[in-house]
Image 1 (cartoon, rainbow, N blue to C red):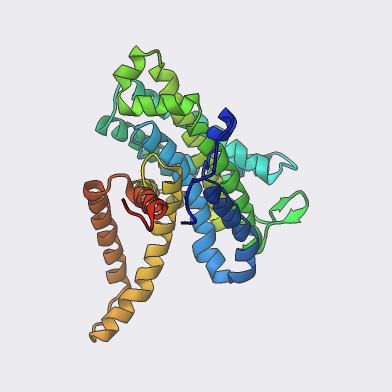
Image 2: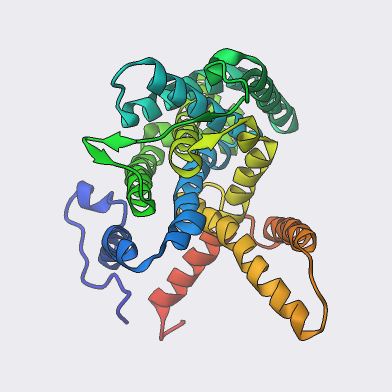
Length: 358
């Protein structure tokens, strides 16, 4: 009975267009954000920050960008890892080559250059779609892998091919401990999540969804396919590029092109599929699932094997992880194409009707 809209009257258009029209949802989200900023730093240990929370926040941000392109605009992309790499390497070059460059501006500049690259490789979307577009964006992945590996300027002519950053500071505050890194990434995710949610509810977001549903009909009613598709590539690449900068600067500290290989592109696409395409909440669900599942399998499978007297190797756990991912993707595509976000939505609807299902 506590999750009802009874008595919640809307008396203005602004109130009717709120992100969370139900008061309980608004309070729950505010409480969750407050707990993330205050409660989690008090409860989590160093392992939790490094292995789970920081990767989850950054990958959720990257999945948010991919979801805008794939879920909302319907443009299949396999070059997300490349856009993350562009964001990381260009943020690095901006940071080291410009004296006194603030970390936040460097990360945003990485997103800007990722936007340019994303729009360039998004040009084929004006003529092709589906599998052909996926192959075209896959070219971005191979090209960027080659460029960052062979062109010495990107790595500041480092003989090892790897780059590193240290002593990060924001407004005079050091970003060194796992808790500080967690709060830094969380601030980025909250800001970009709010911006993305409002963006997909705006006129440009409706244009993206119209292009996704039927591009010919969208063009007939006056929507410009070129503007809609390239803007989706631009916004998506910017968010993914910023996430790539955070992945390199905050999570890794030192990295090489292999950190943004094609496996990363597939991982982000799996997050969107499992979490829910065309759903901001689905990006968070998918990232949480992808980050937590390997850790769960690493702990659960050896214990399960010990019960039956079977020793499961590390390679066996890794292979099982791939099989579970594959099985889940097939299951979600067949049973629930809208992913975990749809299951969450169904659960909320049932909760609103409880205890009177009729």
